[in-house]
Each structure stands twice: as structure tokens, then as C-alpha cells.
Image (cartoon, rainbow, N blue to C red; front, side, top):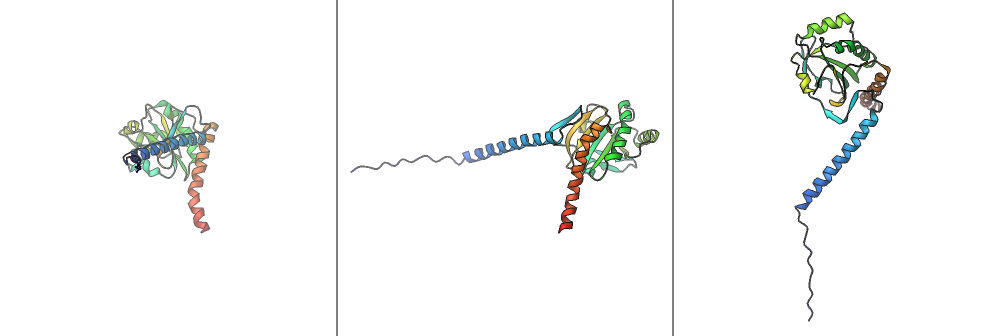
Length: 212
């Protein structure tokens, strides 16, 4: 009588499943990162020379400071709008030179979807900033001061002025080291689509409510 020999295949260990899921998750994250990089580059194609774009948006420290009246403020207060954060000081000559162009940029593009935030690190507080604004006729920029100077390290700023473009979710899109003509045609052409996109995003919920 012939015997039937059963071949029993060894079952794969369940321990290998978490590893496969981990590899799959890593692959998804890599693909998402690559896609995000290309999307960011495409969105900001034509950035002015010297404007260094982030590979992907990255979180910005919630820097603390005070306004012209001494009230506490923070970068988180500006969530929901795109921000051009300019770190400067009244004793910085290049900063003083570019400040009128930031004032004009705020006048041209400032609104619900975008704002220029000039953050001084003057140790003497708000008074030197107010005096300087008065001397050069700044009318559209608020007084913001970090007298501790901690914003420099928190934002990884290696010099003054440093200007950082921040999205409505509080993430850095790119930065510019040194002074610039912020109201120059190429700079306005670069920033205006960002402002318009944010304006459309803010208006979208209102339009949906009206259609209901």
C-alpha cells in the first residue's frame, strides 16, 4: 500500500508583516516628499535671484515679541495668512535702506491673505523703531520688537536683514538673506500669485455657505 506524503509548506512568520508595512509606509513618505518638492518648485517658479526656496515647507518657530504698545504677540497670531517676516534692526544700515520698499509692498499687497511683518531686534525696545518709522515716513508697517534677540537663533537667521516667506499654516516656504527691493516688479510678480491664492482660499468657505 503506497503512502501519501504530504508536503507542508512552512507558513511565513507573522513577524514579517510589520516590516512589510513599515517599508510600504516609508515608500509612500518618500514619494510624497518628492511630489511635494516638485509641487513647491512649480508653484514658485520664477523666484527672484537670491530667494532660496525650501525643498518642502517646514515648521517655523513660534517667535514671541511685543507690538508698539508693549502687548505680547507671536507668529502664531498670523496663522491663516501668508506672511513675509523681515528680521531687522534700526542700527543695521542695509535694513534701513530696504524698509521703505517693505512699506510699499505692504501697501500694495497687504490684506486678509498676506501681510509684511517687520520684526526689530532693537534692545532699546519700540521707541527707536517708532522714531525711525517717523523719520522715513513708514505708514503701513506695524511696530514689532523682540528686544531679547532670540528670534535670530529661533529662526536660524545668520545675519540682518533676514526675510522669511511663511505660508498660512506657519511653515517656511523660502527665505532671502540680505537687503532687497521688495516692491520691485519681479518681486511683486513673484509674491502676488501667492496672495491671490490665499485670497481665493479664504473666500471659498464663504462662497460655499452662500450656495447652501
